[in-house]
Image 1: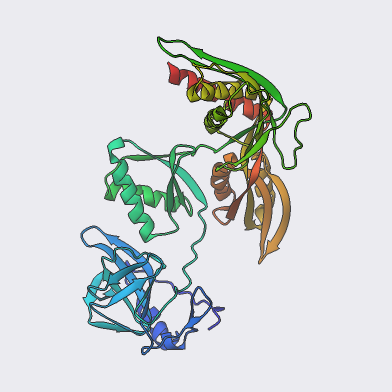
Image 2: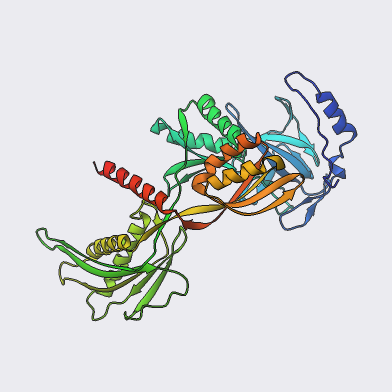
Length: 465
């Protein structure tokens, strides 16, 4: 009852061995649904397995079958369900009708008229209901605490050979995720790749096999790019004049700016007269702080948003590696405008180019994502695991032990983590566990920054050719 003892049975479905013994154990020893502890709702209240209570279903598994569509497996937590009943899904705020009711016997579906509290059944074609959703009849409210799936351990980028299959790929991944929510996927706009995350290599190969053999798509896996960040280490100044003459009115805007590294509590510059300050929290983390220090009306206030827009556009694609820029303070302190030729586009371009020039002069620094990594492995391989972590630029933070296993806590750059999982598997014969969560952005070592910047310049040059 306290989930402290877990019996283990050896079975072979292929050879039809052991299933009778398992069924006998469930029948004779395992508690019935009525004897089990009550289910807990998200608000902490309990649902007892009572056939007379308002009906409540919990969907614990989804299967997508090629000719049938979506098959939802559920447990009747309370009350009873009859074909044609309507239920409310609070999570998606939709009403679902139970068309057909089945109990599953291996691959056979046996149609039934009704199911009662404690029964496990299945139904077809629930439009807006997924794994972990609760379906409530009239008189019942609240959701049963959802299944907490483990976080993914491994990630890869999916590359599809035929670009016309993009939509087909997304639909296939949607179905695969519906069946197994430990498989996750998302298109990462920042690194412009479709990222697949799974529990391990075998898991990943199953997804690949399904996409290639069941969905008939040619795909490859490749190492995901790293979402670096760019910032600066010292103040710098630059000015840029944008001037264009063509036929009628031309374009003119000149901007003088100073940029410096930003941190909380940075005092205003003493030599500039700050008129107003704008703080922009960036969607990718960090800040852009903009100081308007224009005096004597040399640039009209209405052009300030255009200058900021130009700076922001450059911050989306930093000069070092095309990564997002963060934690910079920009002061615009002088400039020139023209009564006829000055407009928003002129000052946007002048702001962008002045920022780019100043950035290169401000000792730019590339930052990389660092993860807190917890590795659990048998004691006799600890030395090998430690040296593997250290060759991957990790900083060891501490050690612990848990049930005969040693735990190493370290901080490791994301760039090294993908290769670490594979290395760890061979060192420990697959007996290690790794958990990692994002910790912070930290400076990239100089020689690595130099290489990444050179690689990016080559790509840029090739792109222009």
